[in-house]
Image (cartoon, rainbow, N blue to C red; front, side, top):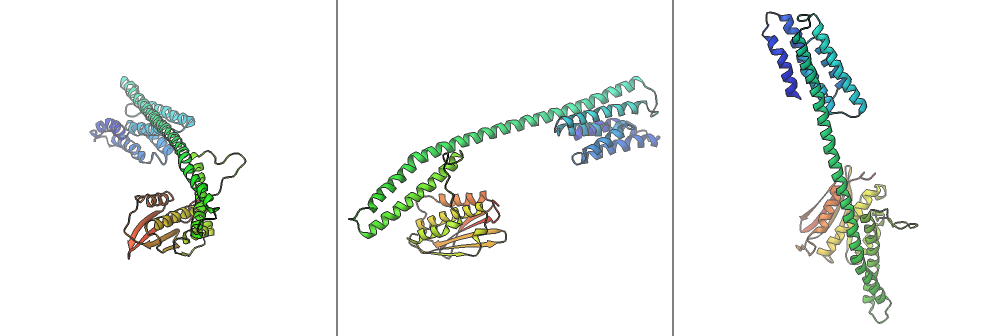
Length: 362
């Protein structure tokens, strides 16, 4: 936009600059021409004002053509709707009328000549080309945006199809295996020829396998994204920090847990509470996996507008078979909530720290 506008201004201004013996003529051509070019810097914040100034300058100075084609091209490129198009066409016609008035005014000669016809033809062509170029640029932008929206829609459709496929595979494979574990452990619980510790272990296995099935079904509902459970039933609520005592009780059956909470967890928004529960659940699972039978300390505090969850356990130096994917999941979950998570080894203790905004989901 700037190059054609500057060239149009220079086309009419440079010949007049050489007429220094006629200072009034130089001022009448240069000042409005440079003014119409300068106000283009405000074309996005005050387009109507810039249009009025540019067309007004064209009434007295042919050098103002640069500002006129600049504002018309800019406004056409930022076209919003049909009403806006009518307004742009109106300013285009106003610029043509201003040029005609300029040519018939007693300045510089006051007579209509063949040069005036050529000048008018050049002006109308330049203004029309600016309008056409701006509209073409807008149409191309709309076409690119539409293609991007179509691509995003297709990508979203593919993601939903893939999530449904994963949900089917998880249901057919994982749910089936866990159901077998629950069934076999349930049979062991009712046997009278087993030692007490074996029956206790079977009870724990049966209870946790059933809980795993319930949570797996909730995950499958989220993956399918089809509105949840069948007609007439209600999906089980996702666990949050209100269920934290149950989680700690389960963990304390095999590991000593020291829990400290310095905030009112009931005042947290549901999303923050649910995600903190999941992060803590994965942190405790990671501690049991890599430091079995070692004490774990959990602390929930507030730092400014954030909630900080810290899980500490002795560092054994073992990576484990999972490859750290649980920790990667924690980091991704915290990042999606606008927070962050990191792991450190401090004083021979493995420290997981997750920080999320306290108002997320509110």
